[in-house]
Image (cartoon, rainbow, N blue to C red; front, side, top):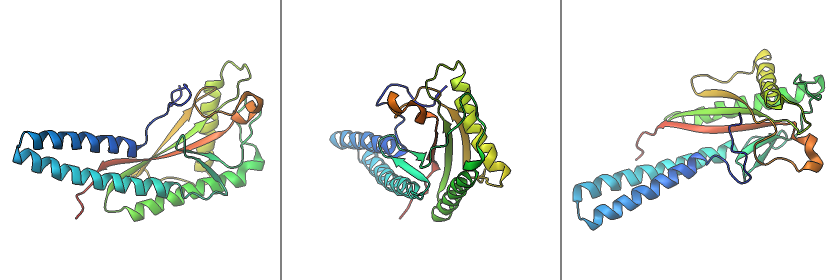
Length: 215
């Protein structure tokens, strides 16, 4: 099953979107508390608003840093907030084996993601932040009955390839998820370019457990 809604225009909101929504909810509560003149509630909500605002700003910085993967290997899609590989990894029909001509390129891709996670860990060492790396495989609409399973196997093949070559993500701060969206999902190439939908997408999401208060 795809992690993404297959209706055009629908996608998971970013963590920033959720935090901004929370900020406005807190703002409404603050106005309500002020209108009823409850000093204790006003002070409590004011403090929470300030913390939430700092959290939003920090998450924006993290998401901006996530876009700094080199454009030699990655192409960022701002509409769907995800990366696709600059070089289209072509698979043989109904197969998930990685062709040898892509080995060098995929090694560089894995190393760049590994370096980014390590750099973010150093930058935000004082915050309890985790990251989710989603490797999403896709398939073209060619009538194959098991395209959803096939797309998952393609993503899994990338992950196993990286592990075999010593590319690992620190499990203490990074969770890797393998996904296959089959012939569904969003942001697909049009029918005239259907074969290009046999591709790999990379999603890197911050997962914030707790933010220490900042002065």
